[in-house]
Image (cartoon, rainbow, N blue to C red):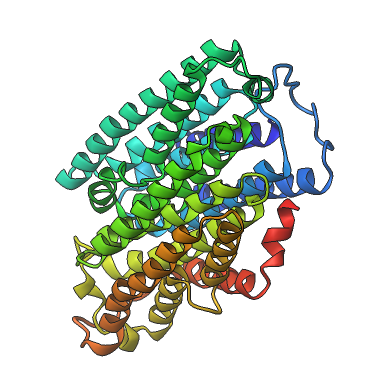
Length: 463
């Protein structure tokens, strides 16, 4: 609860800086504030209860801190620091709106923390709406761009529809159990007298969350929204938002005892295999980098769903995989933002000859794509290896076979971009790289390699 209050207070201060005309201080102040939030999370993790009731007492179990919620909250905060750092150059042509964009990202982080720290379904729904509304605004923030307006409208309509499913599911679960408290619902779900609509409620909530992670067949919004949104917003959706939704789905499934129905795992297995296959084969056809990464995200959503087969043991593996995927995604988008700024599009042609004009940025993008493809020594390889091992133990060998085949297929479209950087002639002269893009790209891919070499740094956090 204290972490959520600190994040919200930081967002309000960002808005006050605009009123006080401290515009130049917004980015450094926000980064320092987020580092303070990260320190607060670390202290709470290492000394459980040290800040209990320090600011406000939660009598209704609306939120509670666990190793799971604190570890994921820390990851969300790190990703937000990267996104905020890149915002200074990205929004340089809109200085009067900088505080708005930064504050929205901070409030988005508040919603993300609520989605993994909830102890009550009403707090979960509040968190998902805070996150969603922030994204609707960011997607349509380039108001003079027709594609951005289209992206915002599509995301708003589809997101509202998915939120309706989640809300209806919560209503049915409340009708079956008489409680919004997750702990009480878990106990009541093990009773033989539980009404049938309890399971319908769980199904509706899972459908809504599958939309949020863009899993097949709820993925149709992703390519258009990713392409039309401003590039930094696409980076936010592809990394932070996706892993927030996956972590929330994992916590919902385990907290509500979703696997009380034997068919639950079979449905998840089907969705996971379809997501991996459709996402990868559609990505092969794309010539726009943002659309390609949108379908790549659909595929990775399928991989992440494999963690649901082992709800009691896979939390550490899910944290590792999401960290590896998000760090690679941040590094990739740092390069994409540099290459495609002032271009008006994100076509693969823009990357021609990057290996000659800027070898460091080309190497970082190559490393990020190889991590996503699951190539050693990068963290993406070990994340997939752990997921595959866990899934085989759970008895779903067929899912692993499909996943391995799709990992091979994904190399095809990742190498399309890599070959363009190293085998094609450059279209224009070298541009100066903003320091923030360099720093974010180097640090994020460096962290990816570090956790790839030492996986226990992440997996041991949830033991």
